[in-house]
Image (cartoon, rainbow, N blue to C red; front, side):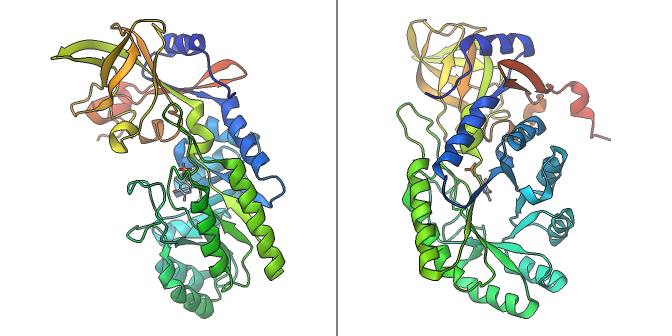
Amino acid sequence: MTMQLTREQLLSAAGEYGTPVYIYHAERINEQYLRLTNAFKGTDSRFFYAAKALTNIHVLRYIREIGCNVDCSSINEARLALYAGFEPSNILYTSNNIAFEEIEEAKHLGIHINIDSISNLEKFGKKFGHTYPVGIRLRPNIMAGGNLKISTGHAASKFGVPLEDIEQVLRVQKETGLFIRTLHIHTGSEIKDVEVFAKGIEVLFEVAQHFPELEVIDLGGGFKVPYMPGEEGTDIEKLGKKVKEEFEEYERKYNRHLQVWFEPGKFLVSEAGYFITKVNVLKKAGNISFAGVDTGLNHFIRPMFYGAYHEIENISNPSGEPKLYNVVGNICETDTFAENRSLPEIREGDFLVFSNAGAYGFEMASNYNSRYRPAEVLFKNGLPQLIRRRETFEDLLSNQI
Ligand SMILES: *Cc1c(COP(=O)(O)O)cnc(C)c1O
């Protein structure tokens, strides 16, 4: 049984900090981390939390304290990670279509770098030769997750160096002396099937033969967590076994040791997050009952952007008579959180909680409709701490000249 915050804890946080508010549960993050490290016991593995899922520095600090490393998708995330106390050697920067200057800056910070284009590999090689190891992000032509919006490894994806172009990588390596230490893939998000990772391993082991200095195979993130009731996530324990087998076999066969890296984002923080909103208005249209809440796609876009399903609980009236509702936002767009959802009777003023809101929730929030971005609260040892205040009118004006 996994840890959860209680209804009382959520209600009291909503009362104290107002809504809409994101609430995170520190120990739940640790629980996921322990599950991961347990599943990969006996394998030479390292885990880098994909910070873009949730970058609040208090969460980053906690992630550091429990012993996890961090993966960044921008130079600013790398700066936040340093600010949160991570050692450069525990920070990875996996770039995609970024300016070479940013890669130079990453090198200057002394962090690990995965480069995702021939163009930047060539610039890096010309400038730094063999002096600084890098990883190459490859595009393995594996379709993962079934959803084009969150799949990054398929043949029409913008991410990574296509496998077909490996000859060009070898040319750059030869001409510049580039030190290639890591082969990286990240095929997408919500990959339930262990076989997708197995396929990735197979592809990378094949490519590995070209790179005598290789030390690391980085399989990226994308572990699935359950969203719908009864749904299953990635079988991490099965994956751990599979990876152990494959890497041991490779070592026996080629007499060569490789370390395996992962970059889990959602897996670590999604289920630790709750998003609490308040019902402003109840409204009827024919036989549809709308519950209009005090937030919208400006604060929590996953349901509209990806068609993501998030469980909703009416924590103000948990034993109310179940009825069907369309839960909708207050933004001047069609921002539907849930359609035809059975929920205990909703009254105006009730608090509704979205679960599984820790990953890509607050991070994707905007000021659309000139609304303030929500507050964030971290529960640790049972105690809530405000870790980001709600914005104010001054924040809306602060960059306008
Ligand atoms: C987003 C991202 C991740 C994390 O993906 P999750 O689905 O949150 O696990 C890992 N690696 C890279 C390169 C990413 O861009």
